[in-house]
Image (cartoon, rainbow, N blue to C red; front, side, top):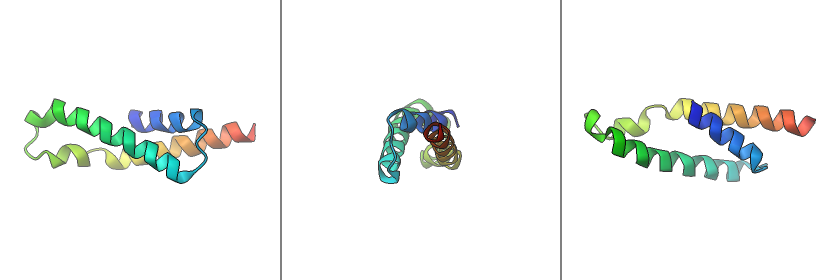
Length: 77
């Protein structure tokens, strides 16, 4: 959840107002973090695909929530 919130804040700080740009930033951060976490946890799981699947839904939910919330608050002020 923390990484999704970070990317939501990052999208607001970069003043991203296009959904496609936001998706590309989010995917880029997720792929990079997935590569790093795979190296750390590869020996601790039975199937490497479990690392990628774990937490993807909360990541996307947190990213969209924080991006929309902060974008709305800052653009209405």
